[in-house]
Structures are given as C-alpha cells and as structure tokens.
Image (cartoon, rainbow, N blue to C red; front, top):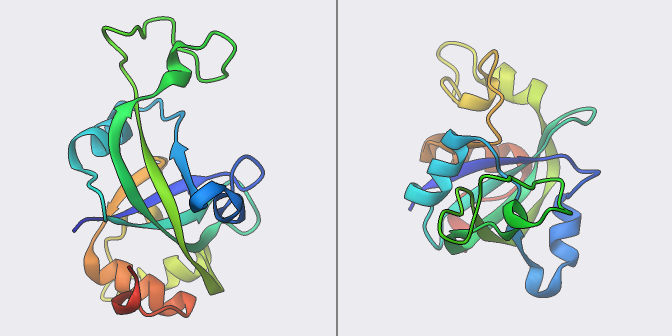
Length: 164
C-alpha cells in the first residue's frame, strides 16, 4: 500500500464536499502537472490511503483521509473546451492527463495545520522529510511515508491502523 497527500482548495472541493458526494466518491480531476500526473498514472493503486489537504486557505492543513477506489483513467475535462481544465493538445488517442477516483474515509477531529506539520518536521522530528513542509513544495500530489501518514493521523485524532 502507498500513502499520499493530495491538495485541494476547500472553496473549490473540500473534504466535506467529498463526504456529500454519491457513495462519498468523486473523480480527482484537473491535475495539469506532469509529475503529479505520473504519480496518479504509475503509482496510485486501489486501496492507497490519502491525506486530504486543504490548500489556499487560512490555515492550510490536513482535514482528513480518503482512499483511492479507481486507478488512473483519462481525464475527460482535458478534452472539454468548456472546462477550465481544457488542454487543446489532449485527444481521445492521446488523452495526456489522467484522474483517479477517491472516496471519503474519515474527517480528523483535530485539523492538522501546516504550522503543526512544520513543527513536527524539524530535524530529528517525527515528520522530518515530509514533502509538504519543504520550502517551494507546490505539487498537488506527493507521496507520503507510512511513518509520516501514521503520525499525521495521530495528530488529527485518528488511528491509522483502524482505517480501511
């Protein structure tokens, strides 16, 4: 199993929005960064767990957990001229961009702010090396080590061992 951190702006799509979806499931579309796309296309598998991170808000941080329930498939928004994610170079033969389906798992009783993550990622700290705290880290999808995933869940008030 792999672990991930996926960022979304809560005024665009929040953890609560995911929870309100039919079957608490929704496609994670609109990714237009090749490295993030490659993570989805090549590495994300059904059952992988995800830290759902609210970005571009005050304060940014991890709101809860979702999981991958469908592996990568073509992102149809890339081929829709009316979509803000439209890519004129995408076609049915060469879709260029992919999406995965995610499903709500849990909301953290304690929101884990970026400041809290940074405090725990100091040299020697339990989150040392977690990518979201690196200066200049702007990727919307990053891999997370199991030990980091477990620690963030604990900070949020959820036992990672009980997640399914």
